Length: 261
Image 1 (tube, rainbow, N blue to C red):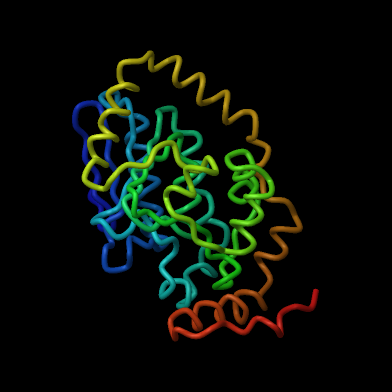
Image 2 (cartoon, one colour; image 1 turned 180 degrees about the vertical axis):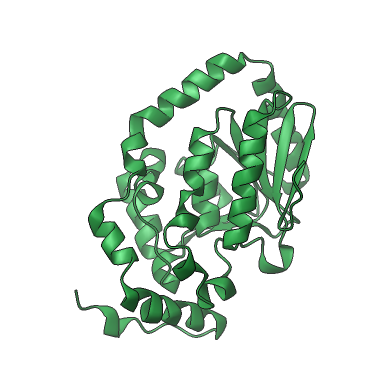
């Protein structure tokens, strides 16, 4: 069994529960966290005792608040260009059903990690949304465009380009969430879905999931234009740093000087 620093991994009754365990950072991740998450999901995928995977966060404040802004400000994204944005592929190609147990904020990467899970079960106080344009933190390719298959093109553009916040009920109404329950019933509801899935044919579930992934798998690629933008030194040295600094200094960012092509 691997040892983890940033998460808790537990297996019981056919379910692997993987928990972001950085509560002081609202379960925001660093590159090291995502490496651990990848290892944990792959471990669950290969474990014959596991039939369902549950992703969640420690406490009742946050599922995951995306990338740790302090880590980003210190150049974490620059050192790992594109790598932080591949975890959605790990979730997509995991042959077992993955449930997002959303126990609070699911924003930024926390939001798209949740919508790449097969099912999302949210507590009533959960909040969903993207952060990218607000803090100058990029995402591209399948991470972004897959949301159109979940909530439709107009809602997907609204969520990604305006970086608004949505309540759990609003997320349910737009199809981002399967069910919303009071926080005190969250574990009961997740367990109910796990038991239902564990009673079904694992081979059928595996084939069905692979079929869903096949339909949009071409979106997982990163095209040359996106790579050019994401590897532009000016972006990493200035624009992204402005977003991170403004967030940490609790001031509005000034991106006006970056509007030229």
